[in-house]
Image 1 (cartoon, rainbow, N blue to C red):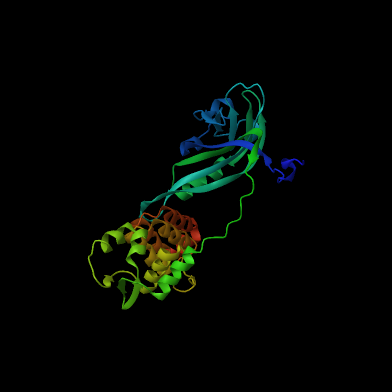
Image 2: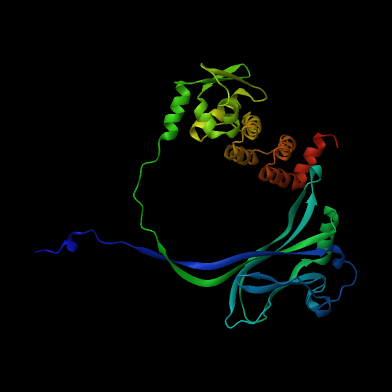
Length: 341
């Protein structure tokens, strides 16, 4: 009699060796006054951050406003210190950068990189320090602060502590299941208008739809439509939304996707109008999609209106993108020039 186990499929499994690491960041804010006058060089001029923990180890950033040794006088020096005793060296990757906090239109604050340092890797023994004696020239840094009109800068330390490697088990390959075609069927339903029980009048155009579908997608539409008793087709007038924007909103409600838009022409204006509609109808995911697309369409002709829109509708990602665009001196000059300032 043959064994039943010999006729079964062979078992399969897999594992992977991956880096075990922990990330962290510390920001040390420094008054520009440390760059003025004859600050001492060496240990007498040392300024140290509060301790911070990354990867289970205690660290500090050390700052010398006029160099740590005579050879670096006239420069700022920055050190990264492992502020504890360890039995084995601690390996870390890290980056030291300079930043300032600035204001743009509407007095909104944002951070601007002054010096984005390279990434380093070092093995730290007990109380060991990694030194960058010539981090940034004192006069050059002071001039940059005066140019930007700020009296404070930030030394930012991004650090990754490497705790060696670990093995993890990988899941077996899953059975391949065909993708859902629900979106296609709902899109066809919208396109055909079969069974429609509500018509939206938008800017002189009419759009047939299904109350139950829209109510399931938007709590605002649900409250508006399902609370209205109607034996026939319900007619709803929509103000403040362009027809193309509303058509895109309906397509998203049925299919979770947007139609193709030519951003070189009027696509950005439609997206701005659509973003307003998503805020009105509480379609938060669609709002985020519009926000992301508008981030890639910012130019000197649209940045002000887009920034105002982001402020009004609490679009933090879009606001940040507008401020980053204005942070470039050339862009800001053109925008201010177009306003006659």
